Length: 274
Image (cartoon, rainbow, N blue to C red; front, side, top):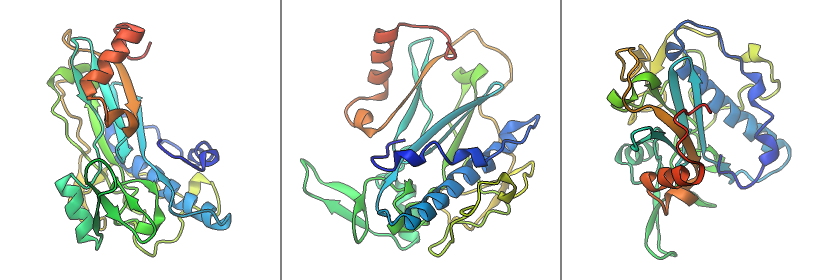
């Protein structure tokens, strides 16, 4: 999270979500992450409106969850998750959502968004344009003045088999669940009046794939595949540790520099879970 205000809300909301037990978590977790991010965003908006708080504030979010041998990285915005491996290499897990990503720029423009060139700093920066503010990211929680289709809370979900990371080719698999209304300019706050998990759509054991450059209302079936996977353990590069940092770090340090700093400070532990 990279949120400057409203921190008292961060820890309150996710207890309204339950994770269904399943033998194949990769097939259902995408829609749970989508439900969590979109529902959390709408609950925040309802609370902010109730308390007459500013609707121009927001946050990035990067979440990493490991279930069995499957690692899920879920993010909106430009806070990064980077994995340090035992052979000294690094693996970025998250995706930076900003106007410089061509597919994100196309998505914003297709949804009637606009961009603004900020010339106030040392060098010009491209930002998402709003009447009250300009934003450096194209996906976020909060920042409701832009509308959910422009600065969307819909996360990217990246899936890895941590036993075979050395063979992984990163693939982003965002997902759209059946039964949860897609974000729109006029969407009401979802699950705003109660924290009961029963208000969430029933779980289904398949995910819906959302094209990166498509509208949120378009959907295609997906098997929720796991990348990298022969399913066999390997003695090659293994996960050592994980870093999650906001753009205050990634703007000045490369992924390799971040991992090297951590190695020097805490030493090589050889196991991400220790």
